[in-house]
Length: 127
Image (tube, rainbow, N blue to C red; front, side, top):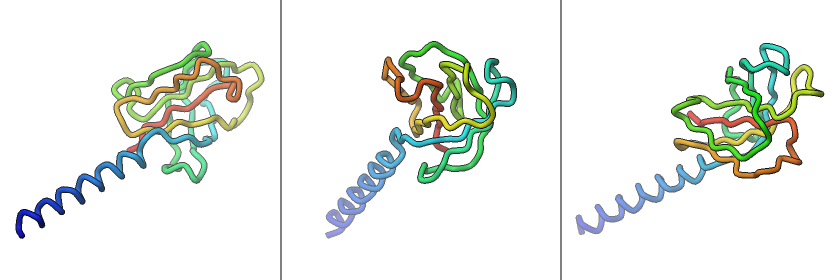
């Protein structure tokens, strides 16, 4: 009986662990991005995800201009996340960007074309 009880506890713990991992997998949403410098320059930006994204607190994230491509961003290099700007020609003020949230060691956006998000994307690591 004790062995069955122990087995049931282990199975329940595994289910909770897997469920938590699924909730923290890559999640898409929208975030408001406000740079601390001109949109045409690299620097930092205040990023506030909109509900129902799992985390909605404002963070100050690095902002980098990069070519339109697929990217894998690593938590070890950007512990909280990163804003990538593909094109800043028409941007001014606060702009909504797509945000990809993940809870692991990296987040991959493997689309090689971003026609639906031509300006950029936010990578957000969950706490």
